[in-house]
Length: 298
Image (tube, rainbow, N blue to C red; front, side, top):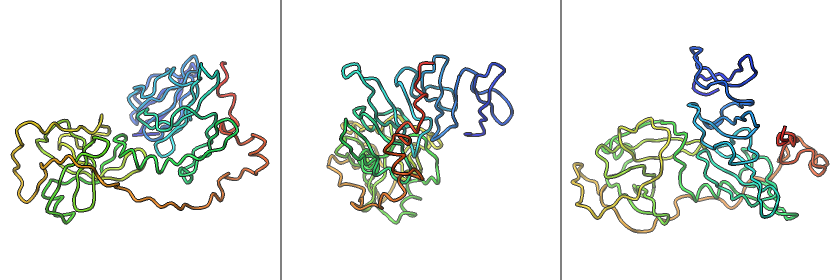
């Protein structure tokens, strides 16, 4: 359930959703519909194709793109499978809630995503066993501006007072995206141009990452942004109406790495979640979670 939506079926056994008033907000169109996770629901159509929809019934990951998908996202990530016509076999990868491919579709199998083990996900290329570190990868790709919830919002002056800084700079990172800096800390930028009424919000995204976001006041509550925009600073400089800040001093310099991650993690103890090693090695607890029939053509 999300935002008061209740998944239900009609007399024909098709799935849709109603709001708390009993109004149909997602038509009864789907042969299967799974609970919303990270803002999306995995659905299957009459041909048993896979897609992910949001609460407005918009296809974020459309039908036909993948031949198999996880039924739910885990911390903003889901495994997907696509048939490779050149190798004539399925290839596995991992996407985020915007449909962006985070882990390329190049693996023969990726094991179940588990919240406590996203730093060490088992994957295979042929007989070679590999480990995928989603924690490290997500730390290098910035902040996903999707599925946002707002914790608090501040004006420029409120922010400077609250966060004990007198100077805020916007800088361009190595990825050509904009970040703002205050002291030795950074936040992220979601702007289409020089802001008219800038504010700073503490937000949490669909991956569970909490971070600071610079955006327009009119966008408070917006759950998704297209992209950080690298503002064109060759135009006439914007007149700063705020004192004691170099907020508009855009600098073309590289950013230092903004996240420090430990090289050591917890042991893989309890990784198999109750499965015995014999079950694992026999394939009973394989990556499809014993749900191979989910990909049958029906």
